[in-house]
Length: 432
Image (cartoon, rainbow, N blue to C red; front, side, top):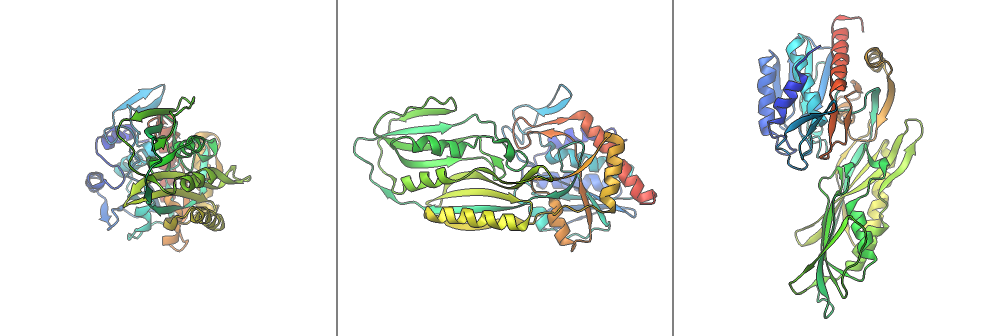
């Protein structure tokens, strides 16, 4: 079993690779793959395909990361058998998969590795793929749960509502206050959406709706695929703000109030009417079948902009979420657009999935087929190959991805590397 995966991950952490800022990482991966003797191709979307010998299986991971806290400045630490980072997201999602692939490229004579770009911001690399795989089987390494062989994932779509600003004079004598919600747990808007993690934007709207106030400014959220940890509003009020919740802070502003939003009441009611979280449950897989997260709220080009991330395990569910959210936003006067829609990966169990489960069970002791309520490149890559690929996904135990609390179980990494090596060897030299 390759023993240098963690060392390679450490090296990757020293290279900035936040989504949309991955050029340095791309250069590093191309150099590393060529040093392994692989033939390397790069397409316009920044995807990298490394091929050695006559590969029978393609390994795939994405090389961008969600940067939270101090990232891309990542300082690694080890705590109680877990790999963590000081005050930043770790980037184990999906840097650990990338490190595994680099390690195996050095030890395997017949292997294909696809490093996709900008996955965390809408599967942009997978959607823009212009490279042709030799292998008929693809093993995605972007899962985060030991014991599970993933054979399905959610599709997703960004839903964007925009509302032009219309200002009016404030009521006489009203003072300005800055109201903030901060310090919330946050989390992945797909994998953790069923945990009922508080959404800072929704909480702020609910707090403000209970006050006599009008909006001046409103913003919140960090990333399109993260549950917001913070939100902030500037409001005008006739009386001092009062709230006993520990996550809410208030600061009186000294400057006079010159204008307020004319449609303040409608905006707050629209936010309060939105139902955050799980909208449907798949009892067979034990995961959400539909969900939606209010991800971002900010001012852009003289308008208020809301961004939602809707997910569903089937196309019909995604269409329902689009229609429901569009109707709510239009009632509030918003214009609605859809962006970066990705197809779901319907669960499918074939010969390759059975092989993966067999080898995973040999190492883990037990493995089960399941799906994931998050976006994997698998659905897009399948659509790019007219369904001719056989696809599975596995990965090590990663907790709290997309947050500063992200951590990866070190022993789990070694187990997954062993599983992947067994699969590659069996596909290359065995009878499968």
